[in-house]
Image 1 (cartoon, one colour):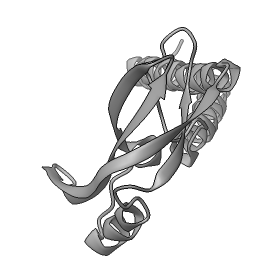
Image 2 (cartoon, helix red, strand yellow):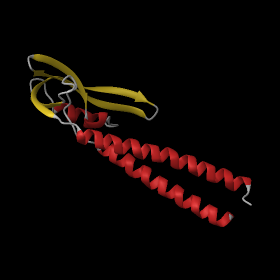
Image 3 (cartoon, one colour):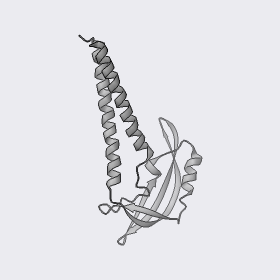
Image 4 (cartoon, helix red, strand yellow):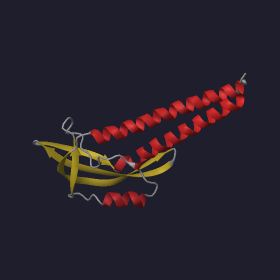
Length: 156
C-alpha cells in the first residue's frame, strides 16, 4: 500500500509531465509550421527603425522595432517587425546595434505567403528560443518520468 504522500508526489509528477509534454508538442508544432510555409520573397524598404523600451516583471527590456514597406501586385503594405523571435535585450546598446542595421531607406528582403500577403516578415526561421523550449521540455519530462519510476519502485 502506498502512502498518501507518495501518491501526492506521483500525481504532481504526472501533472508536471503533462504540462511539459504539452509545451514540447507546442514547440514542435511551431517548428514544423514555420518550416512548412511556402515563403515568397519581395524587395522592401525600411521606413523607420527604433528601440522600444519595455518594463515587465523581469525588469527593463529594449526591443528593436523595424517599420518596412513592400508591394505585391500593386498593393502596398507597411509592417512593423520586431527583431527575430520578438527578442528584447537587457542591454540597450545591443538593441541599438541591431536597430542601426536597418536605417531608413535601406532595401530589405521581405518574406510573405500567397495565402496572406499582408503578413510580411523579415525573418522566416525558427529562433533558438523555440528549440530551447522543446529541448528543456523533453529533459524535464524525462526527469519526471525517472523520478516517478523510482518512487513507484521504492513504495511498491
